[in-house]
Length: 125
Image (tube, rainbow, N blue to C red; front, side):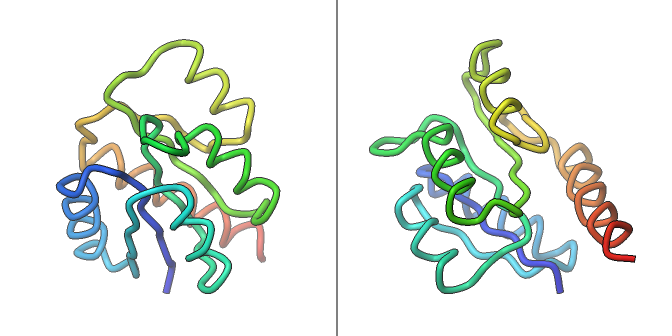
């Protein structure tokens, strides 16, 4: 089963995304910040991380840099309510698969997640 980790300091966003993606048949875990996410991924790797950009302590872009060092094959979807060209370009240059604006639309997220997992399956064959 495909495993997804959600990283968001907003509890309602974490719970909502976890419920939506669990209903789609994915194994979903959620944590509140980048530090927790890195510790979690060291114990339980995930194929996909969905992370907010604007978080206290470690923002999503710093988290993505750290994730690239420790788990370079993990796919990442960045989400933000405060998107800008600079953060979009930096996220994509750091290897994010996609960059979505909040509130995340379920249909849009479903398509992106399917593209990630279908691409991984095709690459494995």
